[in-house]
Image 1 (tube, helix red, strand yellow):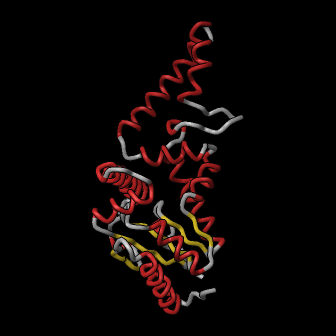
Image 2 (cartoon, helix red, strand yellow; image 1 turned 60 degrees about the vertical axis):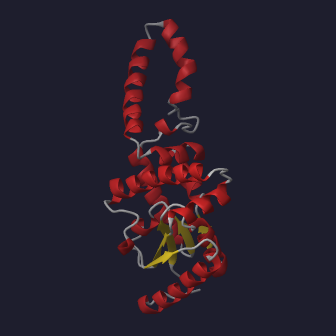
Image 3 (cartoon, one colour; image 1 turned 90 degrees about the horizontal axis):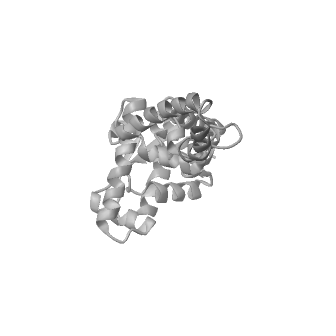
Length: 241
């Protein structure tokens, strides 16, 4: 049984299609569940990991990480001789920088980008080794590029369809809000692919099959993936369950 990865454009229907494919194949589905496993690996809350993912494309975030390290180092060295500063530090630091051994990292600043990328890679590979799963987003198509039992799907759609789908899925009231969310997430997605894999998520050569989705064809797209997976498995010699 192959691992199916689904990437492509934000809002093209990966979660909806992925769940339908997993249901049809009767295998495990990983989308937001990935966040829990990744968070455990970096010792952070799911919220902190998700926020870090959304901010990784911003240079400002990188600058703030550096600045916070410097301020933290300065604060720790100064606190020993300054009771007032030491008292302030004990209350203020947990709000911006938590690397304590007795609790999770609760802010995106506390999670390093490379640390997050490595944890994501390790977790995806662990899932793949277990077999029988659909993995949505987080660069599964390149993380498992050389894995022998994988089938990589790229989903693409016009922006107007992507806006409608995200509005329906997440409850945005205005198309402009949904489009802003899509573009912001896509910046993070592109930055992740390029910074850690030197590829672009919209490069169709990354995928065994690329599909243009429409608004109401989730079931059709899912079945097309299942049939394509069957053909791919026959060629590659992978046995379907």
